[in-house]
Length: 146
Image 1: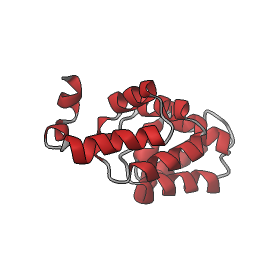
Image 2 (image 1 turned 30 degrees about the vertical axis):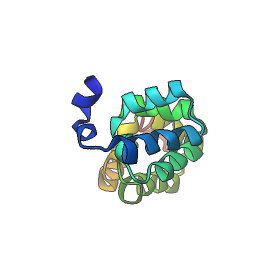
Image 3 (image 1 turned 180 degrees about the vertical axis):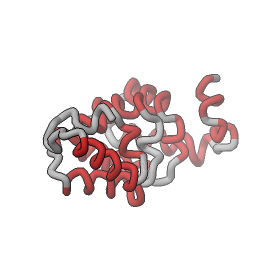
Image 4 (image 1 turned 90 degrees about the vertical axis):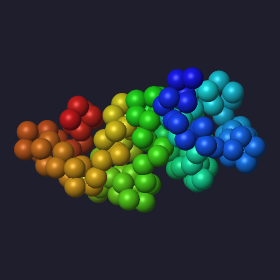
């Protein structure tokens, strides 16, 4: 019932043509039944996304595992639903351009995933604020706590 409250779109979704194929797709992508339950309960809208595989593949390639992806999704249900092209990829590129390591980016995605769902302008403002405080860009905690 809570799932329906969190994502009322399920009430309109056809089980045979939308929900079952998306569940099957998650299984084919290597998610265990337990992981699927964790992922869907963290981000119910994942079952309504047409480009679910593209999004999952993107995040798994960055994070390295289903476990890290699920941890990040538990902290922000918008991680999988935010636009990769308009928000996520530009924000990650910006952090890379600033010299922030892949390891640090992964840490930030897992601990503060909502940061990546913000506008690029907002990320630039965070970076400027961190620099004003005199914190090094290569510091692992520079953006994580802001």
